[in-house]
Image (cartoon, rainbow, N blue to C red; front, side):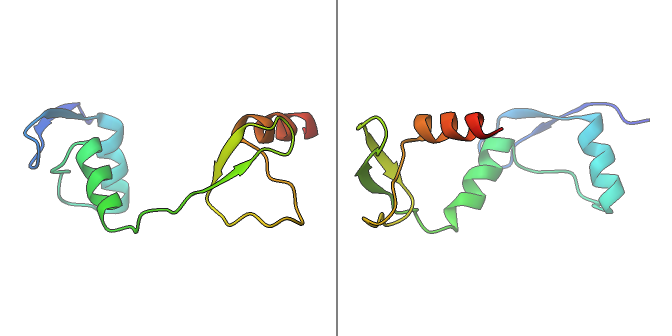
Amino acid sequence: MYQDKTLVCKDCGAEFVFTAGEQEFYAERGFQNEPQRCKSCRDARKNATRPARQLFTTTCAKCGKEAKVPFQPSNDRPVYCSECYAAMKQDQQ
């Protein structure tokens, strides 16, 4: 029923594909207009309204590497870098 369409981004002028699956998704949700921006321009537009995320620098409690985290670390709980945290989550499963 639906076929992929090539559209042109209103912001950057690049061509992007409006897939049959995306068209079906739009129809199911009752959206009547096709997207006017490519994925990267939609993401940039969405993120432009969000405040910049503040990152804090700390030292990983497991490996000792520098880690950047989106919260103010306190001294009462250990903080891990993303690699050590992912490894710990994997071990718990």
